[in-house]
View 1 (tube, rainbow, N blue to C red):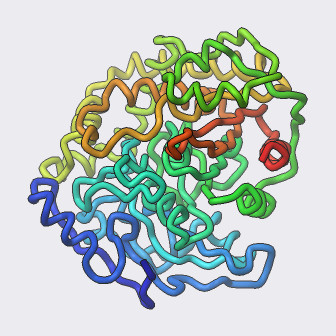
View 2 (view 1 turned 90 degrees about the horizontal axis):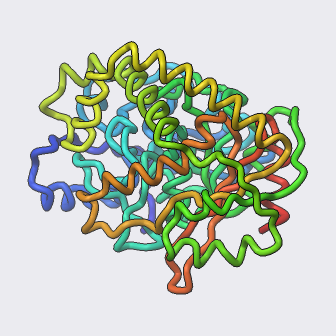
Length: 405
């Protein structure tokens, strides 16, 4: 599928529309609107020459691009938001390094899901497994890279919003140490855990972007370890792929698999902060929010402030525990507990969401850098393996990933 010249915005819609009409509109007009909201050739040219010359960005619809609206995966936001006056700093840095912006990529509704199914545009295509979900929230940016329409997908990662689509679509992803990449100009879901990151088709591109955006390391890495309890949180199909990759690694009883209490604390803080960021808008447009995300925000509205304070304290305790326990080691974990679910099962995934966050929240709780490495089953279905490193070891972690590749 070629990408046409010039920018084309996606027309809006409501979640109650007939899905066949949504699907028909999604592929009308020369580009897949389940992947892109706006595209150009390029949409924004580079501002200088540099190490990223020739690389095109798919920017998720939560990151500011000057002259474009931040729609957050919702047509009402697209219609009512003013165009951005400035690029997000991360976009400006990449443009100054020679990259261009190919377009604005679709996300899950308000960035608050992990499936890649937006009720306003339909389920984003998974190019590596067309009968399976693309993963979210940065579903479109990942799919654009997997399709070869962009070399870098740029977005944010909170509960696995970049890592999960990377795992489902056979891509590399980088979630930096919390706070080392300027996240201003990127709409928050949960400021305590949000991190700007990126996905690419190869580790060399992943590292080139890292060399542009990441500061010098303040920590080192000394070896790879695996915790059998964390590995056991994945299903048989994933473990069959990961087990051979674990041969020779030191086994470590880390105690870091998120307990029910830690998972509850993490999800409580995410919900409370998501409501602080989006609650007023959600209340004003409740009838235009999809059922899944709407239920999540209704829960967020009910979170007791006392529980939020207690959960915030527990998160701080877990961050200290994780960082102290990990020291200079790199923990190898499944990126997601299963391969991408089948599209037909998209409405029956609450248990999988919880199981996925139990794995992905380790990096969020610790504020740790994580590289997701693509592997695949014998049938060619993508699987992700994550390298979780010490805080501030981002460049060393990318070097390690490149060596393993």
